[in-house]
Length: 451
Image (cartoon, rainbow, N blue to C red):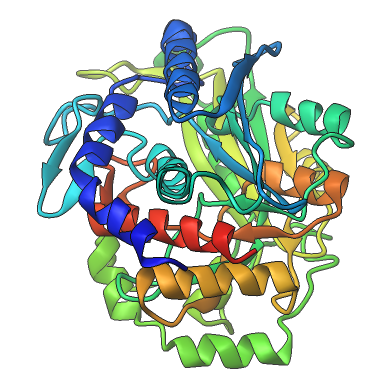
């Protein structure tokens, strides 16, 4: 790696941050229809920025939000695809934000804004890595194709359909994804595994409408109580999921993975301080990292029903609903798990109630071979960019498009994240450490130079 490239990144850090601020001002919330034009505006800004750097760039329209496609040819026949997403999560609740989520601010070495870490800041680091090579070397050592989607945060499938249709044109040596995290503030990481996910809307109905609790109390079922009872029977006090067949196919950790987790020396006290826990909780018999990375989960993401407003309303709710998600691990099959959940919930629903379930999403878990040369190249790039020895980790989250890349292109997906778990992705006061943004740009430049 030539020093001029790293010097260029250091010298232009101020401008890079100003440009990132502009990128972050767009409320590109893909899940909210009222922000449709903001999402499109953000995509157009990204296309224009890439064109200004000399790349061929355009919007690819879809049935949902557009894909940003850009390409820069290289000086060899090698090729990388770099993925990211320019859409962001909703910002509610707004009150706990210290500053406006779409008026980026810098405090204590961090850029604060919705999307700062997930994923605008991380994808922008790659763009700046490419810029540094173009400006100091006059070209790229290999061809780069950027694919940035606008539907990652709303479960859209447009990019997956595009990959299926264009897989011949997308043939590449590897796909680079920076939508994960470092292991800790001082330790970069290559993520070699992601959990999959399945999600359901569950609705329980007991009557045609809410009823007066004095007139009908004791004679009719209460939908909120029914749903609460059903949910309570899905997991035990030991954290073990009670649904028959739920754990079918779960692949145990390999010996090297257990050794790797022990060497990481994870600190439960740090976890408790970071998220405000009294004590960790989870499936008995497993360490915290095993629970977060390599064990499946059953979670209730939200529940509604009855009256919860100011004052009091003596009713018997006739309808209650819950959003349920399961994080899945190799070699679980999402649709099979969903069917197990459907059958179990129906079997424990009392006869005086009806239960309806609608599948919202399903994505498979992925696991990559850490000995793959491209994953090793990503590890080396992080080493030089962050000036620290990287480690191997799994991630408890899900990135559905990673599975699509792997299945359709049959090439490794290198997950080299630049963020931190404490960045507050999907939460209030999201932030991205400026040092990690710069180190990420250097890591990207090193990877392209040494492919």
